[in-house]
Image: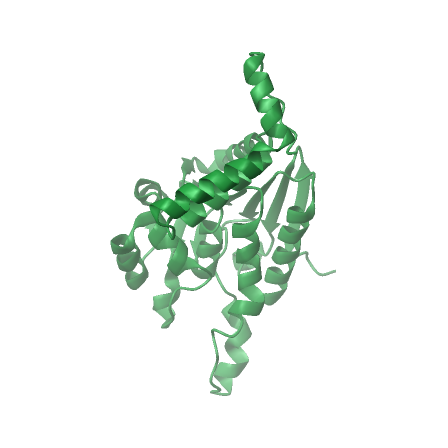
Length: 264
């Protein structure tokens, strides 16, 4: 029986998606990326899902693209188009993560390298174990960052640090990642799974449309000028303000009680 490349579990409004090739440090094969895209699409379409938690099984989050797939071409000394698989294989997954109208949390256990690193950083909130290592390893094999890394990383840590890190190919330890603002939280290795699950449960209990609005506003802010962002805030506030959760939140505030949001 073929091992499932990706595992999914749903509970309390949280869909946990686990990359499941631990024997290969969750290297990103075409099969895994197809399964990951399907799992994310399922979570996006599921009204019961109000938060996605993405992690990897075993000793690492993901070691990046599975380069064993190009071995036959190397043996034949054939030219390889490394950009060709990005649009059909990687980009749909990244678009789902960024465009999903619900939060995506990544829990990075161990190594996150190459495209695996950038998939983690495409999440809305990134938590890491103290043993985690983040690597923009592309330059080590003569390639450039892909899987949205050149867009995400400089927005998180600035151009100077992004340039130095990507050009060096050196690993970044989890504490430095936290200090630089690359990730949001750092936890002891044994505590990470439960801490990540608790963070996801907290987000799942929040007003989902408001979270989607926050996500949309922050993603747009770096490309908008001041006036454009003010206009987007106003439009988004109007849209979100009509939700049942907004009514519940204000009613709860007036009645001095905790709000019970339903994601509606």
